[in-house]
Length: 301
Ligand code: NAD
Image (cartoon, rainbow, N blue to C red; front, side, top):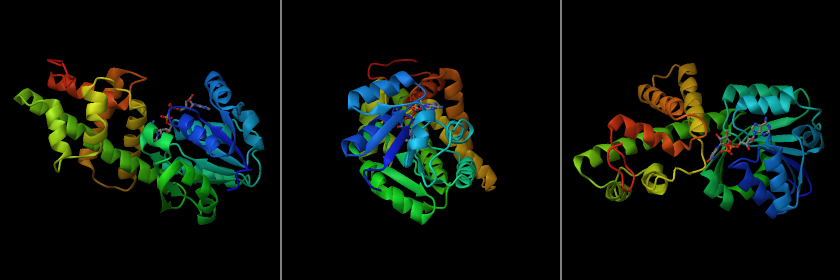
């Protein structure tokens, strides 16, 4: 992908902001767009680029990067509300989405002469800032080839998963594993705390032992024991990903009882805690159920 191609970057949220920032810094031409025009305008002002509504930005773009909350929003922006897209344009759909919806969007776009790949990411805001995301790619090989130079600026691992929609399936399954690991770790800390063990010491032991996982390493001390709960990944978005994974289980007739219990817990946390919560606040629900807090100076919840 040539640096001279015009890129429309749609969705300048927690992830889109640092990703768009990297593309600009590394020499690409970008127009940014967000439902919050104030946020897009602030990004443009801080980075010396242009912001526009999606309606104005999309028809001029050779490449469209979407980093939006859900597939429903992606479909609304690209298909329902969209003006004429440039024939030959490539959509790089980097949100975490629903595989079947992604395929349906790709079909609608193909009929208009536009190509789409799904390229969801893992790694969170920190790795978005350093260009070290893990990127999964679903799509026709020639479309993925075309996107790869740009994706290399954002990720240190780029893995092809198969046809369009396959990367969104893989991403949901990754987050299912991450969500189960998070709850398993938090429940262990709660049991240990009630037994009399120190939560921070338990995290250290887990991280030196076979109980280690991404949450014990990168989330528990940083966001839960510290009570900062500011990882930059929303609880509603994690609950969405787990639901996508469970829908895949249902669609493939795969018994997944542990995953189903995990979905119940994350959905309950989203309902009990309300909107706008960080996903690490899932621990608060577990604390309520256990009747004890994990906070550094915590006592009974
Ligand atoms: P976010 O909520 O911070 O950002 C989404 C942005 O999209 C917001 O700025 C919002 O205003 C904008 N938006 C919503 N509707 C829109 C519309 N109709 N038109 C234009 N803009 C619109 O979310 P995020 O954390 O940046 O996540 C984006 C996607 O990446 C999600 O699918 C999420 O599941 C996935 N993801 C997030 C993380 C993370 O750590 N935050 C990690 C990996 C994947």
